[in-house]
Image 1: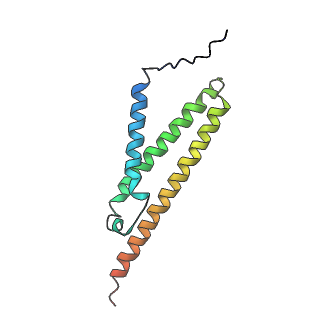
Image 2: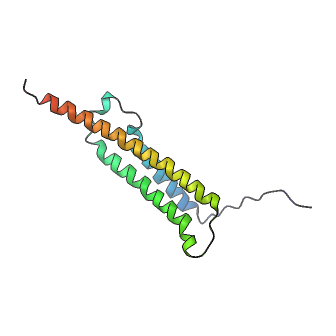
Image 3: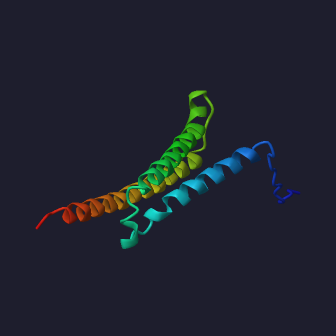
Length: 125
């Protein structure tokens, strides 16, 4: 008879790398958190938020490139990569890039609103 039990095998050698990736992606989300919803109180902190934005987006884009390399580089070596893995990576890339575009639009609106309020306060009349 066929044994239908599935054995879950954990590769303990990969655990530190996975933990580092999870921690770095968590840091990226924490850095980008102020840009999820911007209100009037964020306009005063607009200049200091640029560094958070740059570091958070850099971490996300580096990991997106790493994931693409991990999935598609074996094909260059002649190994077959499952179509499901490639499709899931493309879907994940679309979600992350939509998130990046959303964050950039939020940051742009924060910058434009802050610049407009500063320039209107300098008008002498």
